Amino acid sequence: MSAPEKNLKFDSAKAEAFAGKFLTVLNHGSLCVMASIGHRTGLFDAMSMLPPSTSNTIAKNAGLNERYVREWLGAMVTAGVVEVDPATTQYALPAEHAAFLTRASLADNMAVFSQYIAVMGCAEDEIVECFFKGGGVPYEKYPRFHAVMAEDSGQSVLSSLESHVLPLIPGLTDRLSRGIRVLDVGCGSGRIMNHLAKLYPESRFTGIDLSREAIQTARAEASEKGIGNIEFIVRDVSDLEASAEPGVFDFITTFDAIHDQAKPFEVLKGIYRALKADGWYLMQDIRGSSHVHNNIGHPIGTFLYAISTTHCMPVSLAQGGEGLGAMWGEEKTHEYLQKAGFRHVETNQLAHDIQNNWYVARK
Image 1: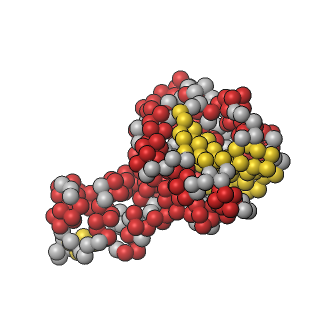
Image 2 (image 1 turned 90 degrees about the horizontal axis):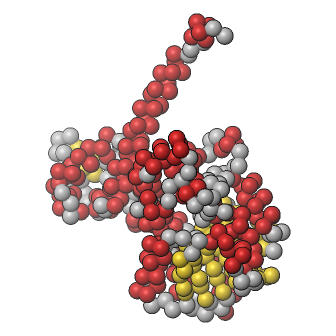
Image 3 (image 1 turned 90 degrees about the vertical axis):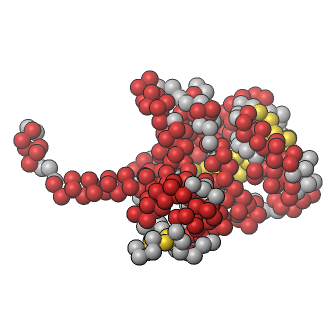
């Protein structure tokens, strides 16, 4: 087709619509950074407790600098998050908005997730270099990632751990009460394991993770809370199959961890090896398809692919790994689990969790 013929097919209305959409994208991307700041500084929490107030009053209640608060409020008002009275220049956070932006909202607090946008941006220079040269970006280039992940799992997993997650395995809570051995692979900052260890003192818990910083945080929390039935180990789990003692653990978990591994299949084989014959493996991982066309319409598909591009995939590749990525999908997950030796795999979805699948696997 010649250039003139191709130009005749140019749809101006479609182009204008896309330009308008991308302006919205720019505003929404900026809003995520501002929402992250609002969450981290406690501004949303402070405003949710105040009547309509001036920027001075809001800043004073939040313990912040008024000039910065005032400019931040401008972003919130133009985004439709905060309302302003033109006559008094008093600002208000509607209760209907606060219900999804404050720490009091627990699992519904969407401001927590806005932090990932800034975290992704921190490694942009390194990621751009990888596009040209290949390779990956190591964990240490993401200074806040583990902190944000810990907060994320704290509200999305911990809040439903006893009510929704543990009941996925019949009789598990009774076994935990009597005393079993539990392993969490890729435990991060250890919030989930510390919670379980305190809840079930008769059981013994082990958490392992590649990040020394995350393990130090996990150990500090266990020490502070006086939890004695848990240990945290810094370790690369890529060789888990070769090094794991066979048939030791009654219950093994991974929370959003397998796809980040350098050698995810080897890790799964190691988990299979370390699990007792009558043991259970609980695997939380990203919900999606292994085929990109099936993810069109996914409610947070773009977000998940972006997280994968800027963190999950490069972290694995930095270790010389497979670079599986967060969106490896349910099809490949089942393939890997079955090849690792698991014969019984059940996929569960929780009504409040649009991001994850919960796989229950047995030998």
